[in-house]
Image (cartoon, rainbow, N blue to C red; front, side):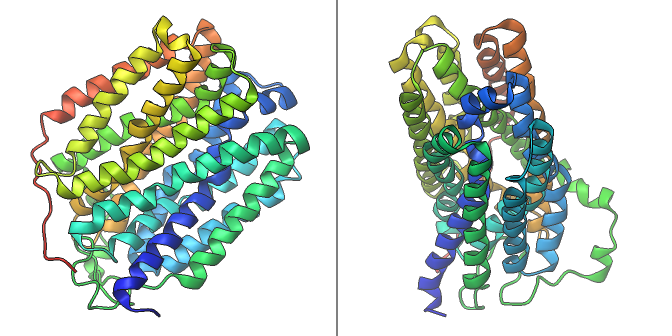
Length: 419
């Protein structure tokens, strides 16, 4: 292995790539809205159910993944999960119709359950708190970067060669991520892991957790949600992930139906929004490393910006192609970028020795929004024949969350000597 201080950047690179590869196909579903609707005759609500199907199993799978990460090596937990994503997509290319595609995405979600908490923990144990926000932001940028590439590639593949070929492409990409992470990831040596994520032991052995703690009931472990900081993290995450899901399921249809943009310009706008999200995840996380007000302040700013963007999108001004493109890029930067500082704050707020479980638990609860929001917004669109009520609902929910969580923003930033 290369020098530890340099190898952490290798770890960051492979964790970012694996994140992008694992979510590649799922992030491209929204962009494939038009060809999928034409090929399968789907309503907007049915399209939203495709996104929900890929996120259903993680409702429980994230809890399981978090527990596995506290017991076993991240290398195998993440690698096997990404391989399951690949296998599901490759086998799913044989699917015939809408119902089999839903089943395929359930399998994909089961494998993807390990990517988010596993990748977050693998980066957290390699980086000192003073650099952890930036590192987390870079890794979390893998999701919108994967989404940007998927948005540029998968709709064209689905239109030209069919949606089943798009599954093959997604499966091959996920397989590359699984192989790379399994081959190259290592845990840090003790010298580097002197300041790991709070409560996680350094070295190559799994974190030492007392047997009595392992026998603790699930109810007792769920008690971490009584902590005010964890509740604030949970509320803000649920709100902002709803915005991300809403833009994902409605963005392409809005540009196509309301602004009358063609397939090429629509794809370009969606790619720009995903790239803005990747930049946001890095920039906002880097800000959180230096913010005297704490890591949570960039999350509050993101919620305020999202409320502004969604409100503008719901007005007649949002029907202009130029305005819609700019607003979606704005929502990409803040509505996707929030995740970098948020997940860094989450890992540092976790109880000692339970980082994997805490990350998995909070992400699992967030899955409720990820599952319910896309089909609900799709149904609202189908019922009202307008996108404005959906944008307004997301803006209102985010505004309420901002008002509630801003009152508890008193957490100081975490400091420590440089590694």
